[in-house]
Image (cartoon, rainbow, N blue to C red; front, side):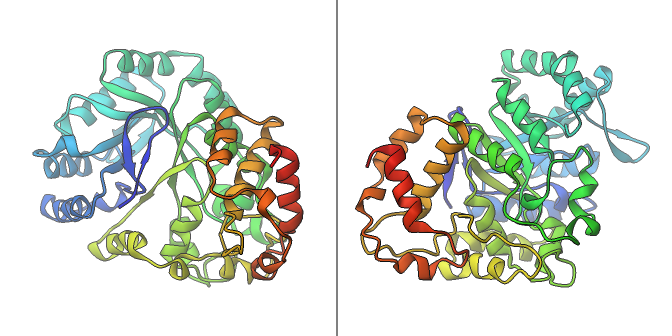
Length: 382
């Protein structure tokens, strides 16, 4: 298992995390089997958005003897009413819902206090201009939460949250389909078939800006909806009309700038194993480029998606990393010091390019890599 630092904290999280969906409507023993298997494989990170008391208690009982081994991303602003989950901004419900989470998980702290589900501008203004953010800051000051995050499906809102300087973590919906759609305050737009009927081209600029800003500012993205609710795993359901594997979906997410971990909502040991297999898979098994290059109605042509298909470079240049760092600078219209240092740390630089053209024939997206290397030399000086 590989681990990444979470934002500006000292927490190191597994790149494969757990979603909590798989714990619902299961016995304590069934949940413990899932949790123990994940722990055994090195998973130490879980997102717990659900206010379902049964699911919370089952997970709490499963980790009661090793709470310290888990980094918990627990959500503020969720409550349980009339047998179902609800999002809330009412402070009495926010506080009681969070207290219930602590009690059912048998803990006195939550590692990442996530302000739940902010997609609309009005909601963002209410949360960050009122009592919710004040409560989150109070919890952090008391050590009851270690750091603050939010969950969102809207890149414009997520970017605004990142720019407040108050948060270290953003839970965001990422996969190749969603990355092509423009921002929306309505989460249902992400899986509405009509939004995929017209051709879409390349990654939406708002999403690209969010990912690059988070990478630059050391704000970690944790991923939900990596499989598009399972639609991407079925060619009949996928908006792309082609089937991807779980490994390809995970690799797509984990190669986006700023991403620290993907929360896989495993409902069984079999599904959990499919996610864990990522850690042992070959490059060929994880490679998503060939699949996306066959997408009939949508195109990434000309856009580097950091897939690494251009490798191996005869001069040893990591083309994907060079392009990633150059794109970060272009998005910010400056060269951030951290990006300059990352580029300098590369073993080989864009100036080593001899324009042999081998990478051009390897790239399934027809990126003009030789020109990209020239642009990087102009940008970084070597």
